Length: 295
Image 1: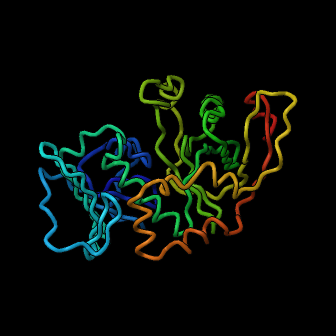
Image 2: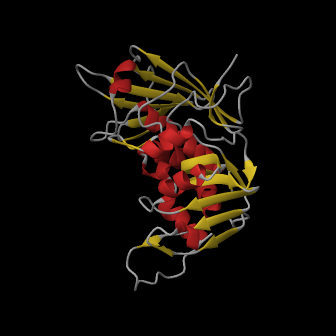
């Protein structure tokens, strides 16, 4: 049996789909070759016409999220459009009503299944010491380079320029870092920067670019922020502060926060947040998107 590869060597998905709305961990489940074996983090998804109401009283509840035994449930009751998703922690199976799959993005507390699934996977990775950050990664002249910076700081445009020079692609938009072993995992590129704006340069380069498909040891991680003000001098920041602004998307999700609350994993979350970084890194600001000045 073959499984979808979301993050090579780390996350696989038993699914017949190639895409899910707001599944930010991977925008294309067919981008990497399928895996004959489940990865260390393996999940299954099922889309069904409807999901029956719970048979027993819930163990705990937080707004539209509840837990019964090993099953977590997201339920937005509606007379005409029932919106339900369940996740079994024992089997790691997501099951959701077909109506929910039509939701394109979060709308007033209604979440597409892809977003809920991505946040739960992100949470599981985080407490195991893997972080997902905004950033890019590439291999060039034998060096594995990672760059993290807040959004809209020119990272993808710089990656485009490096790919044109012959760099091998590893990650665009999302950096998946193993903080213990100092490794970066490949992630699928997001050809669309936004729903309405295509990255035409990356789309063109992607047709011929070389792709790294295995986790790699990092030679240097650059933590940077861009300023257009020539007189501005930012204070020196730490990797943990970049982790704060560029990571932990999952903590905005009330389902994940409910899981942390019920499962008692907050100390594991804090441990990852406070663990010393073993990856060679430097924190350096830049001006006017001049990435060449910091490398």
